[in-house]
Length: 635
View: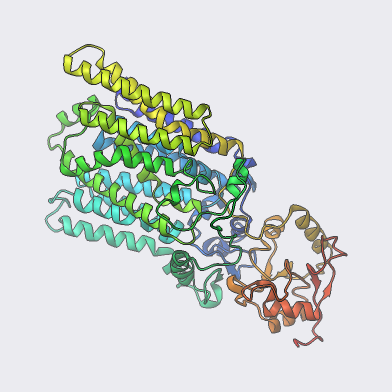
């Protein structure tokens, strides 16, 4: 019974449910050929493994550190290369985040807050979708949740090991998703700055300032470890980083994945932009998902349509603000917690030096408030936003929601009851707009909202009159509060699982039939060539790399920057190292100059090679070209 009183029993059950949402029918979710090609290539040699090589030849690397892909390589080595093995590390990371967030919240704010935070994290639709995709954001998010828990534990006892462990986790998160992880950095920094006791450090020489400096140094060292390690190799051994302007992994990290993302600079494969005033079809969820993400605005996360509708995140952000906002403000002011479970009381009575829980609670409240603000502001204003990016602040959303539910759910004052009534009223009205008509889920939300307020009134009256059973009334009110606020995201998560939704990109993915015909023709016509094919673009040939795991000569990177010029292509063709070129698009006066289809090497192929697309049974002409021998000049 001790585990149930402390909340860990409920958190364990919620974690099991979260795991089910993330792994059921996981193999049926579509995969991302771009990163899967890298996983395929990285498993062929230690050189490719370390650098995150995109193609088996190791001349080209992905645009990020390959830390997350290392987990995927290990998974496919153990389970075989397939859809489930590729996505399993992300699914497990998303599941692990549930007890990590719950543990961080539970220690300063009590068992009720931990259980509610676990529930919010478990059913958050955007997290469920991301964790079921073979991208890397769920792993980054789990590391941020781990850093949050380690920070709380370090502040409670001033322990150096916990604090440095949190710095390591935060540094690894940077290695997984680079600047996206920095959304959590200001809040986590304030947690440690405000939460550490002034005498922390464990020795006279390493006091609080020294411990903070050491944690900062560890974070920077871990965050830049892989990027720095690449410089230990000669330049000719380092693959060209996709997206960079000079081949450097540093450039890809801080320019292509940094400033270019914030400013909205387009790259190859970017989808259509949202058109204001256009009437998009939205009769079905599939049609609503196909609508481009809305432009930057203060209400971007509260829209009804697109790949990031309010059902998948904005609803819980709004609930966290309405319910948790007052609780965070009171915690920052130093108000006592809403409840203290029996296990915490016994633990504290047995400690000789009880940590200052109010200090840690205040520091965590500031941390979560800043983390929430950073996430809301950035993702509301960011020009190029993929839904999976918001994983950078989903732990904060779940934590604030849990704290708010626990605080309001105690109903120990009229103020809390009023907060619950206003919040649930606003959410219920918004639900009518959000769920596309008054279907069953809306009636459930409305009924639970009204029931919660009614039970809260009875619990408050019972507490003041000293009646028995007030605990049961209050518990029922909290249950109603959770159902009212989590019913819509739970429904959206179940729909995402049933629809096999993925947030992975499909940039340049080839039709399976095209890949089949292309692979069959190239296998029988290679004549010992080193490269299976020359491709005008890396993103357009990923599906073939996944299938055949053979070296590919890539001609351009993003923005049609030339990697292999026409002279080198002719020289390699003359030596028999590459015999065919694949051009997936056409070049005419309407094609933008930044398209790989109009790059100089692609133009040279059309001018000097022979079109064999019909012989390869491809769907149209101009796709596969037989390259000339050494006697042909570069023109």
